[in-house]
Length: 332
Image (cartoon, rainbow, N blue to C red; front, side, top):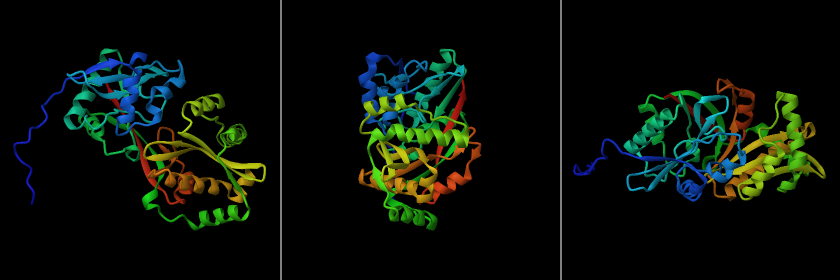
């Protein structure tokens, strides 16, 4: 049995940090911390957050230690529907504390304590914290979850996603295998040309309107802007029967995974198994890119209280398992 030496110095009971509101003059240190962090993605960069324009009242902060060394950044903005609430962050799926591993244990508790005090003093009554799902972690970094527990935060929402671990993918179902074989037998072709986005977006918009009376979260101009800003992080995969576009999906590339978004197919595409070809091609690209996970996105609605089990089962049939997106709120 190995014993840990008793003379190891424990972290002091309290750490003091300096919290600084984000301004454009702090762009470089912000972007550098996101790049160095254990959980950051391109969605946390100011380059991404700024595409929202003036849609949100930004409340992001940078956290410095007593030696004025930047230790973390915290993307946040005021809730557009309730000005008494601050969210980390309303414009992205996930937020939270971004740090390079330094903010562990008691340090994380102290930092989150001071963040709470900071927003309380600014007049906010509640903070919503969107935790980073574990699959996005380059190295385990869930000290913030423990800190939230210690500070008596309430986990009020959990969304359920479907994720493939490329290194340990479960066998696809017989139904999915049959559908893929049908697409291959039909001589369908794959395209990675982003210029197909206009035609594809029309299929997506029609699907959302017919099935859910909804519209895509992003507009076409917004997608063009994001593609221009992040040419290596956003990709469109489509499948054709000769010149007829049948199905497609957008891919967002993050450090540990590829996140699929906006699946869409025409009626004929569904008959021919086109979406199965899109997904299998995307999974293969995930593997070739050296990413560990391929994430289908959530199958929940109404703040996580409703599970679309039909959709969840469909995604699971590709050899995927469940991943949780957790949301916490703290009264200030």
